Length: 323
Image 1 (cartoon, one colour):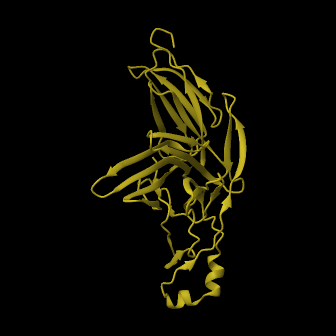
Image 2 (cartoon, rainbow, N blue to C red):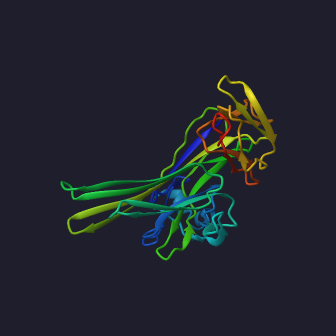
Image 3 (spheres, one colour):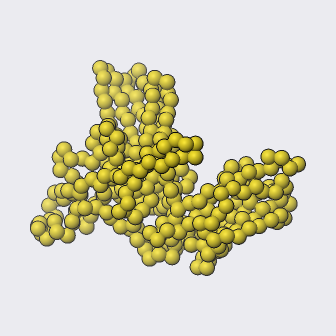
């Protein structure tokens, strides 16, 4: 059983802090004119803004609560670039933040409105499951003179259910016109502990840009959604092959992180059970992988408390013994 938090990042909304409004100086809006491409989920805030020092210097904020926004002077954190060789021999440019512990995911989406073609250059997105990228376009409305374009990127990250309650943040990631990528600390945060209730928490962040050409108004926006769920660390993992009569055909057991790169199930296999043997879990954690799936995913706990994922390709045989 897992407890799930939903974090919705739609760039532009700022949270509240100790009853005081948090804002940025005019002209310093994060991501202004830049493309929102993803985010980094972290435990605890990575904001460079020292709230305690600010309140010590401005005690009137707490004494009088005049409603004036606190000026957040957090600075962008710029990504480092790595070049990784892919299996097909091509080289991919990868953005990293070596000094930040968390789950990074991003997709640089290009949309050609002339051909309606969508191209997404995705990062490794390690530790992200249920990853989806889409674009929704509303064509020109002759009555209103408006059109809209919304890019939607979503994924799920997993955290250790045995850890003490933490505050989780989704920090927005931007790319400038010249290709520079940076992280803006201080995204929306949620907190809670695993209690088996399945309660969903959400926080929202919004980015929209409006352009006017003649009598046409075009609104373009990006939505990044990260769903956070808890899971128990596994001591071992079993892959159990089952036939149509729910009889076990074969099984294998391994330690997390040691899953095979490929698996050829028996020809009679109708589905595979992925079973996590967890010492602290009140229930057995199982996942059913139907025959039509091309791969299965297992989870590997990291020192940060987040899980990375490991993929095993499934080479199904046709009933009769050929692939």
